[in-house]
Amino acid sequence: MEKILLDAGNIKYTQLSAERLEEAIAVGRSFFADEPVCRALEIKSNETAQKELEELFRKAAADGVSIIAIDKATDLIVGVSFNRLLVRDASVTDFYDQYAKRCTEKCSKAFLSFLRDADSMVSFFEYCNTDCYFEIVYLIVLRSHRSRSIGFNLCQVSADLSKILLSGINAKKSITGAHLELKPYAKYLCVVSTSPLTQKLALKFGMKTAGSVKFDQWTYNGRTFAEILNNTDEVIQYSYKKIV
Image (cartoon, rainbow, N blue to C red; front, side, top):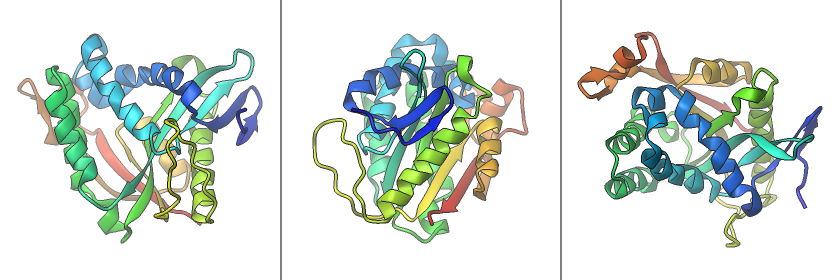
């Protein structure tokens, strides 16, 4: 039975479970159509690439701290926050490099390369002086349900879950059946956002900015991401908030 973490009108929020994983991944596919880097790499038009990159959602979900938004009228997922607990080591970078070797599509490899680079440009480990942080990695709301505060509420419920974990209660929900250890404790909530909408959301949520990087740092097929998107002002924003 799903434990409701927030009941907000027509939408309820709960942790992602094994039973809902495939549905959440299907909702996650809208990320490939809307996220700026995915648009620059034209991932939306490449079905094989989308299948390859779905592994990123599964990787995040395995940490047991992802949140879903469910429309109570239909009992369908309309939003998801794929969250991770990041620990100071080389495993994330290694994952991107190793998984890229298994991908066949050029745009899949380019997206994984972007993620690896973006993670290394501003280190939350160094900036926040921490060995573990809770990251909202992929925040996704279906177009049919936007402008209804679902994105904000997904962030709020994720933050609430991070506080529960820091208090010493192991509230992780395994999607594999494997036991998930409580420690190490995450003391910061972080997000690397590429969309102006999610960047505004981070500020609304009270997060501070650790830095930003312009899209002209990356190229694809001889053009920078900024040129492809026809926006030289777009940036990647690194935001954080202490969990208290």
